Image (cartoon, rainbow, N blue to C red):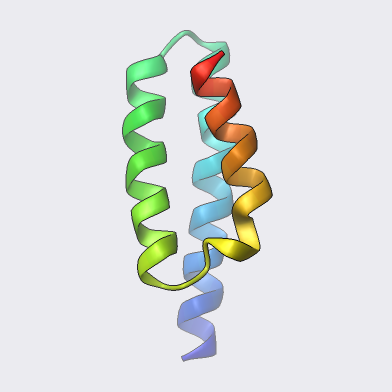
Length: 64
């Protein structure tokens, strides 16, 4: 169980970091899609609070 959560947490972090790169490349729509999917995954697995800072940062990049 913990290995599964660890794998999901790693996926969340990688996705949130890739959003930064996509925004820099001007691919905002793709970044929004990844953000939405990642946020849904984090909420389902009850990991959202732990990564809330990263989610807020990604959201600011998308909005701005």
